[in-house]
Image (cartoon, rainbow, N blue to C red; front, top):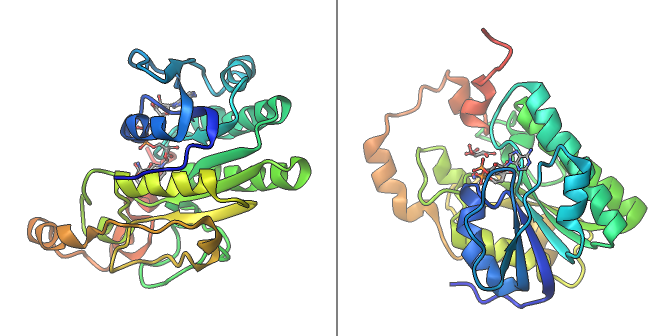
Length: 271
Ligand code: NAI
Ligand code: 15L
């Protein structure tokens, strides 16, 4: 249970029809007076304190209308897995440009950007990295999230729009495999983290790893203490069950070698 400070009049949630959008929808109404839900796909009817403005992120005019009137943005929308480059280009690269241009025009000053652990997916599972380690994307998808991180840094330096780039690990109801014991982020911790990003007095341009308080981790969040995120959940309660239902990893398999897991082998260029 999260009890966030309500600081925003109208908060935009993109990707509202997706897995995390659906999980956050009920939670984020506590963060604002009006939660504006947006997606390319249909979003179920607005309830109390909600409104729906559909938009394709690849369409600048639709994105402009989606952002108008909002005072902060939680940007989850876009392609969330590996895909052909053209599709990634439209949703994740052009989409980020359209979103930040609309934010600039409409005076939005704070964005929470759903980045991904796949920005650094080619680090090995035996390493611990911080936000200062250079990106090592493992996919076109990971490259698009690295672009979003750089683009938001540019719009912070040039236009003063603060952004938290949340490199989400694996946010699902439960960890699905042994890798996710290290990368898991509960929905409540995701909400805690986003609430912290929305309310910390000075956010600047920050990169934070989106993970719960898991005993095994590859990511060091010490560079993000100013955000004030304190995870309350842990994958550890699922550990025995995950070990019991999954085989021991083949240590020669790239999916077991690299932090990005299966994304390092998902190559849309291979026939
Ligand atoms: P999802 O695929 O369930 O949801 C993404 C939503 O974006 C979908 O509803 C889709 O319709 C919408 N979308 C796609 N292209 C669009 C476009 N051109 N215009 C407007 N909307 C569009 O993904 P999920 O799991 O909810 O993830 C949300 C965000 O968090 C994504 O940006 C993803 O990359 C990121 N993320 C999620 C992780 C997870 O573990 N669930 C891990 C790391 C990052
Ligand atoms: C992601 O970036 C994906 O959006 C999500 O579907 C998961 O696969 C997650 O990373 C992960 O690495 O487990």
